[in-house]
Length: 269
Image 1 (cartoon, rainbow, N blue to C red):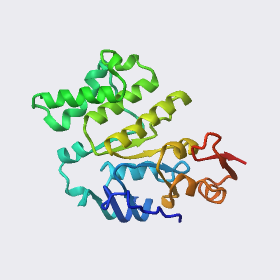
Image 2: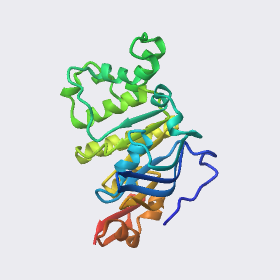
Image 3: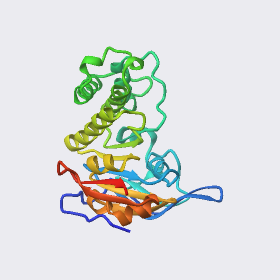
Image 4: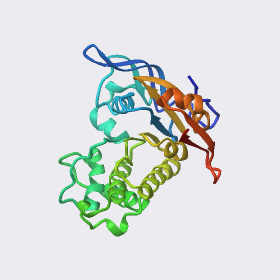
């Protein structure tokens, strides 16, 4: 397995650290790995074939499922020792299927990100308002904040959901296939925004992607899964190698330098 090389620029303590983890439903194993970590200020892309365990790993980090064995730490504490509100304030999770936002204005949807901070019966404070406005500005939605979410384009809706996560003021964003239903222009728009938010706010981002070239262009690190195991972990340059890609995806692939110098470019041979 290709291993990620730590540098002096990575944080001393990873935001997530998991060891000897297994996830199973009954006797059926879904995920099994010895070591996995996530760094603050880094965009990590999970790649691999369908059913390889990408979404399962993301759900594990989001506390949507529990490990059958092993240890998962978040900010140095066992994942299950965090209370619901504290965890929700720190980790934002966007599943493949987003909940309906029927009848909500963009500004109202973004404001829902502040729920972990004020609760069901708390008042919407000046801080909540400031964080909501900041999230709308960071995601370039000021001109859309009074529009109904259901009237937006696919890319605009994704930005609105991302804005809600930014308003949540979370340290870590977990995104499951955030560009799967978008055209190429909106895919680039959303991934550029995610990358920019990670850089500007020092956020840890973990996202599931199927497009290997999009993953290579917008992620600092790629983690490949195969049959529920971590098959490779490293930079896009380290992982986009023909032999590794053949092992991960089961097809012959070639790799060339990207014409604009932005990393490698893979294609089916």
